[in-house]
Length: 191
Image (cartoon, rainbow, N blue to C red; front, side, top):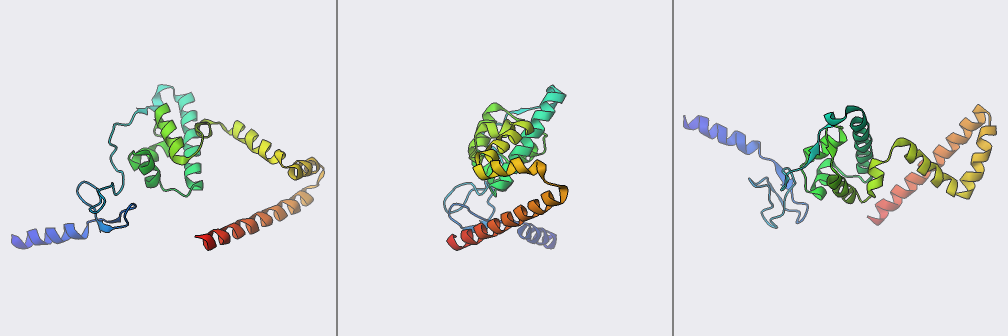
């Protein structure tokens, strides 16, 4: 019997999770309370300190489902644009990572209080999380037409033939790629 116990002990040691504390950078095994051994801060937030209010999608299936899916798409897009993982966003909000996953998959619709915390964690205005596709397009169009060059160019687009429009769009895409490459090089140099 002692052999079986030691074999179980080795198996459990192999399964232990190794983590790095984001605050003090100490590499360590996960503790039973998920707190850092050195700075005593959470290694990651898996369990919320306070219960989370979740509104069920089934209350008004048509309107809540559409609203939930819009919020889900916005949260996911903004989170990815900010280069945040679900775990990092959850840590900023002090909620479990699974709650962020449920929001992004449309399985949970956040309350107004949660939306405020979510907007704060993503560093955006709460309106960006709840706007619909049409208002988003209108805002983007307003931003585009605010640039005098693009506003002037937009006048000529309907007059172009399909081939000319395609050539113009390819040129614009190539310039945008070059700009993104230049920005990434600058970011790497400054980092």
